[in-house]
Length: 123
Picture (cartoon, rainbow, N blue to C red):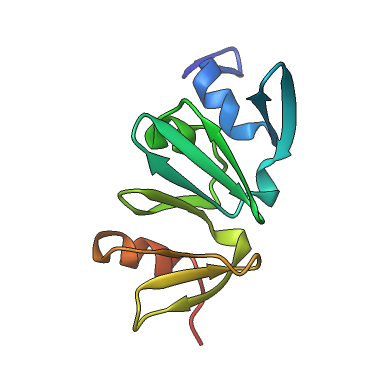
């Protein structure tokens, strides 16, 4: 990032974080997906699976690359998962599991537990 005369220049990869939608290629078309609607993203080798409700979109991107283009509400919760914290419905500490509004669940690991819980106010 450079700053000259009160102007800030961001690299293209940094701008992706501020874009509100993704375009996912499906055959010969692009499907627009709002980042706010994504529950979580899972790793599958060289691919990432984007979970939106009961639908799954597979893209050829690493989990790290997907994480870099997501807004701040998306955090790494496991070596194989990124969660959209704005879509979390509950966190089961006994089973180390995060449940979403779509009734899907993913695990979280001890490594990322503190970061996950720091994003919420616990009462």
